[in-house]
Length: 224
Image 1 (cartoon, rainbow, N blue to C red):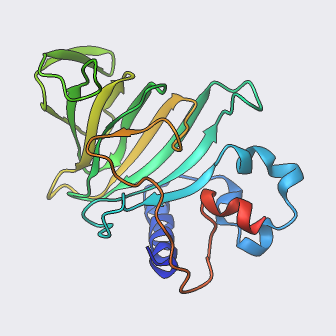
Image 2: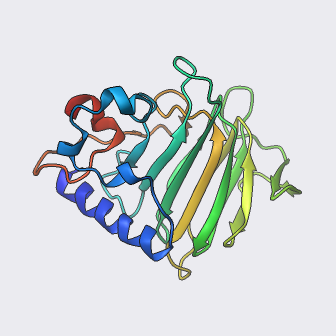
């Protein structure tokens, strides 16, 4: 992805968060220059990969298959005792986050407002492929009995609990608008805890055609 595209997507996201009256931490809007020399006081932000993150999953078409998110809080078992994480994401209509599960992380995905979020689901089997067996999930604490590849639609305020090994993909329902999506989970590690089927790229290769307006979490080590 080009840095210019990333810059515009973050600027657009900030406007959407404002529209939804969702407030980010004050450091979310720091420029690269303002981050310099801040490691001693902001090591948790930097080491635990808080902040801006986006991906096109190696597809090259962010609007078709992509996700922009902001990690608000996250633990790091090598450095602290915090056992939980929280993210906020923006999902456009028909913009897919492809099928994947997590080996370690259990999470709740929450429709915080805007449009409807479609979640396609399937359990995994003993070789980490798609299972052909029925399964159950909970939405807002209510048990749902599902068949492989069933879809659930989460309207604003609704949530789903995804246990380890549960394949899921999601996208905004066509005609319903952009979705503000929350995630509350165990500690998040996107570098080692995503099993995509089929495999995709999680972090984009960036073409630096202009300077960053805001840093991605993956930029910290290079700029700070």
